[in-house]
Length: 434
Image (cartoon, rainbow, N blue to C red; front, side, top):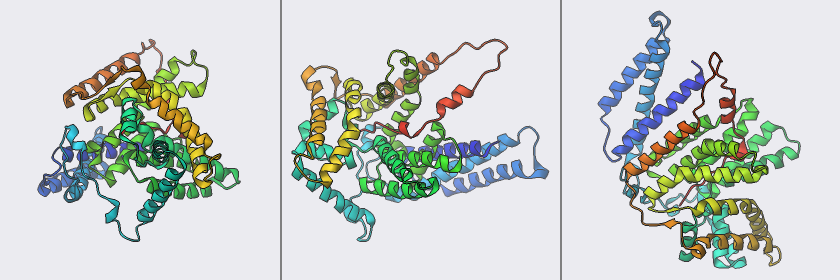
């Protein structure tokens, strides 16, 4: 068995342990059971690895079972350590479980870098409010670092248009940072190793600056691993990166696996990008020749398809406009970010004109549902079972459309499957919602 395969089983077991404890988040775990399971798992691993005790034919199976038991125990124990500090109001399998109380920056230590980074954010927000009208300033700061100051009317417009992910820093922001920073450093002739070290520092600073939400941390981990791959000479696989980022984030905040809407939407969207988006991209390749337009369309449809059942359950709303608005808005985001940064650095009426044009266009696109008046459903009463049913149906359709008739006496070729899992930094984007 390859070490990467064993690591994958360990990650899956850890997430199973986190999920099992999440069902009873405030109940203490009996440590007698944890010790017993640890002893049993350790014995199975020892039996599978000790030469005199090796069992023919089942050594790998014993190693997998023993490792799974140990990783599940570790997941239970990690959640147990966090139990005294859990947010209030966690309700398993209920959208009310998303309405927890989070900690405030006022409890940070005086020398904590997050405190002065927060003060810097406030200064930038104040400067944006002096340059742009209220909603345009709130939209710009939301796009740049997730600041939430839109008026109620504008926020309702964004919600109906399925565009709340625009004002939540997500994987697309991390992608832009990764591409720009690495291209800038390598353009100076620096070695990739040295450039990667500086990129890592810049990425950590960016995550702390925008505040480490689920979508940002997940995308930062994946972006960091993707940039690490050329340094160590390995090709990253999307499924593996997704699992690593899930384990890394739940190590930090174990309750996020089942109780953080941003975390769930981030991973569902990425799963849509890895499956449906690629399938759609391949089907429309001959119809839409322009690569960027094709990627935006397929990514929007894939991410929306995978996140819609969850948003209907967690937020009681659904909108078909996300397919159209995201297609129109996403190409504008990099230009708005660049123009907005220039306007904040060089506050001037004429310098701010390009950014103002992009911001006004996005605000106008958000009003499309009001102009049309149909295609938005609110106050939906979707149950947890209905949401699971919808995902089961999506999975069945996915298996159906990917079913291929095998050729008789022909060895199956897995190269295309392996290639389809390989991604580059441009695909690290997500549609995390509010």
